[in-house]
Image (cartoon, rainbow over all chains, first blue to last red; front, side, top):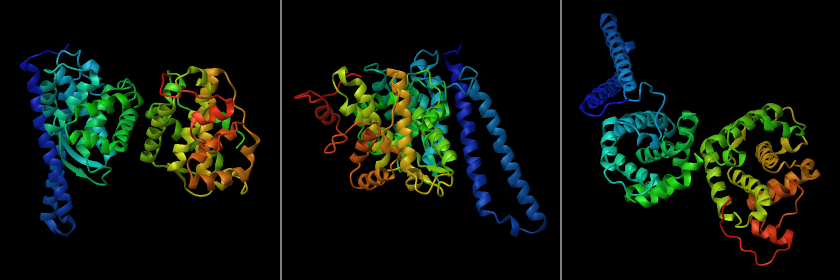
Length: 232
Length: 207
């Protein structure tokens, strides 16, 4: 059982901080690799440069391990079992369970959209969810639409690096795909194929999603969810 | 390819009725991938699949079958068949597969060699149709002899490039039906011409 209260906030804050540090390290490492001419640095200086790079990569890997360990404490000990939106609403720590599931799903969706790197803020997702639960009108699709706008507003996915863009509207498409998937009844069975399908649906509906999201049109987003959730 | 019905074995398992599973993109994609791979092995070529085109075809098909679903359950079985014809239409609009090389195991004058990607999409739709009809109505699927006629495929490919609706008519012909060639992709027109109904109300209805 998850416990409510301040004790659950600390792991998420710590995890977020470590992820930010890891993100910074990865970017820094990539910058070093791209810009440090190792082959042309002679002798001892070259050895030192290679050691610095190696240490930086080890630091990043170490942070990865710590972050993963903390992540398990939120999803009832399992990082491979994200919760459907309906199940999230039954959880003791709704916002925490949602944020962890959202983070898991978004990290899987982003590569389909051509994203090679991005920072996903679990804290921002948690805050967005907490803001939405105070307004209990409408059905699940209405709630998902409201939540999607809040997630976009909170910039839950930021600092995006795209190799070959499948869409110019990555945050909108990615969050729509995740919200679609979180409402589908296939969430806990075969995550990867269903998430991939949700991402493809988001890409096909790109114009409609962006138009609705940019205009803050909850009703239009909710209708898209009602229409396509059964077909993920 | 006379062994295409056995390819139904390559369809992914599901706990849902096929008529439900087919309308989930994740199942549909998996089915298409497995069918294309099996077809490629049988034909002696490899098919590259464009996932976004496939997803787009799927969503257009969903819209099409919902828009034309008859209000009366009287035509449910006929509509099952017609839904497969609409699926072929959407796949042909923007073919989501491309052969990587010629089908080396097929005779040069065969339909599969003439148009591998069109042949694969058509047999995929036939396979889904056959499996769904067997499950829902215990009805076997019989192919019209025109399936083996290369001239029909030539006509299909040429006409479908001009008017995608032709694909739906060709599919119905493969099942031994005579389509309404003026409106081959309109279910109400087919029903009126085949069954002689007058003044039917064909609006959206429950499946």
